[in-house]
Image (cartoon, rainbow, N blue to C red; front, side):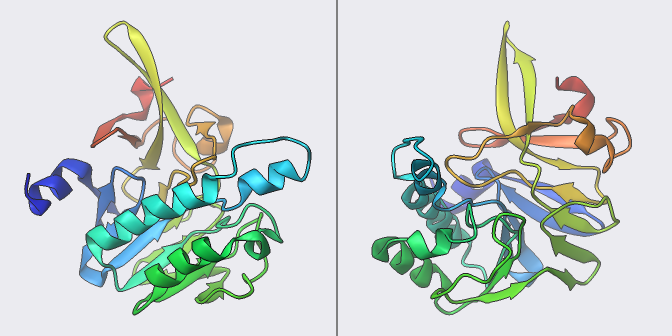
Length: 231
């Protein structure tokens, strides 16, 4: 399969406030005209954070998350990358990132603008890593921030949207992009991150009832459907 065909199979178009985004099956969004890639909630070093509290998880989440992100960056070659907050699982997580993983981050950042949006888990700038830090950033009709407010033109993360659908006699639960065409909430990108059902009342504060669309992240493609069909 050609590279172009492979991209088409892995992506879908998602409009937000007049801007057409290419949504990747990984959960990333690409503003092609601006060569701007957006990801949310990497939660790097979540495994080591849990280990410090006596909850032992395989210590591979950071490497797995960065490998997937590196593949997306290589696929689209963006000029700018915005990480929408909670890129690190706790305030000190950036200090625990090992040398090989730091090298992976540095390789992705080389030759492009990288913006870390501050999240509730990582309010401080990551020491020893390149990139600028902002509480939010406005570009054209859009505002990129961590916690959604429901504002027009907003692209946010924080809530880790997921949806469950019934298919062929069984149910499937997947991370998803939630959008009503005016605003969007992105799924978590991190390997160890969970999700919050779009039926949770937190989403009712952002969208008008269930009058929005979800783009479920499949293995190789996205699946679009009305939120009202999900449970």
